[in-house]
Length: 195
Ligand code: SF4
Ligand code: SF4
Image 1 (cartoon, rainbow, N blue to C red):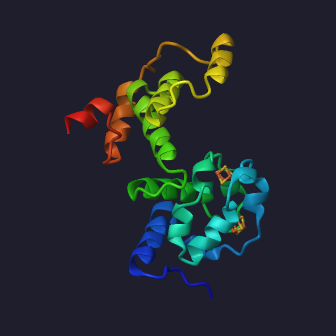
Image 2: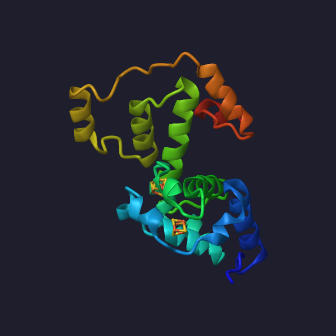
């Protein structure tokens, strides 16, 4: 029998939080068939495959999971979720893990992951969609590498894949309301400075 729980109380609580946030205790039903990983389009770039993430959770290795690269590589495409014979919503598990990792300040790739995550969400909150140029420039400023990937940027601009100006969607207020409803709205830089 597989027992859910970590080595210590904190780890055990965290695993429990994932179970609650991601859809019941069906995590425990995983029998490692590997169908999730076989269908995952991004498994090749992960340090732990989706089925391994689930296994680590069953074993209570929360720290290992939160520090993994896999949870940030996951694109939330839901392929794994639709393939799982145990109805485990793996995409949602990954989502919950990102939220917990961010909240606990545990990100495998250090500041870049956290910065990208913040900038992306700020952009969505402000415009209702992502404004790629501001995310990329913001990330480069935070990295103190202003011209990082400049060649790639030039290439994309030339092909109209990057815009110089942001476009707001019509329902931007609704998007902001969704952010607020989550209880921890992503703050803009201006808002953070004010605090
Ligand atoms: S598809 Fe479901 S049961 Fe199979 S390994 Fe993945 S999570 Fe486990
Ligand atoms: S949701 Fe994530 S883990 Fe699942 S198949 Fe898509 S990329 Fe892979």
